Structure formats: C-alpha cells, structure tokens
Image 1 (cartoon, rainbow, N blue to C red):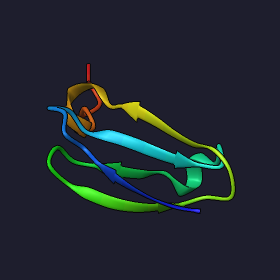
Image 2: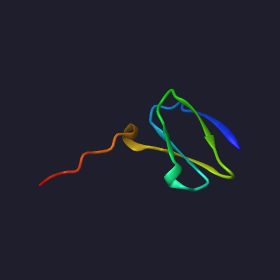
Image 3: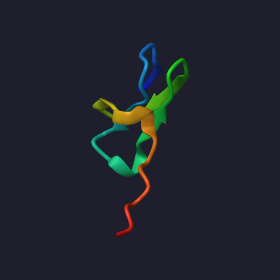
Image 4: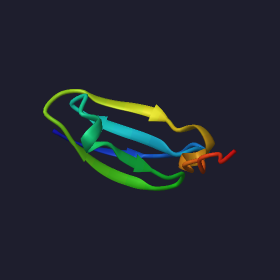
Length: 58
C-alpha cells in the first residue's frame, strides 16, 4: 500500500513501515511524504524537532 502522510504538527514525525526502523522516514513540519508498506505504518513524534543532540564531552 502507499499512504500519503502530511505533518500538520509542530514537531518532526518518523514513519516506520512494516516495523522496520531501517526504512524509517522523517517528515518535517509542513511536509508531505508518500510511505509504502506491506502492512503497518507506525508514526512517532520526534522530540526536539528531529535534531540529533551533540554528544557531551567531559
């Protein structure tokens, strides 16, 4: 199946097709993306708008 996902929220969301995190797609606020899957498409809101924090150095 193909599903159009539009992110109407303030934060980035991650679309995970068929429970395979290796095929995840991040969708920024205001973007629309087509996601393909055989079965389940899981959507997760990404904290911090998708920015990867820098590692802390002590």
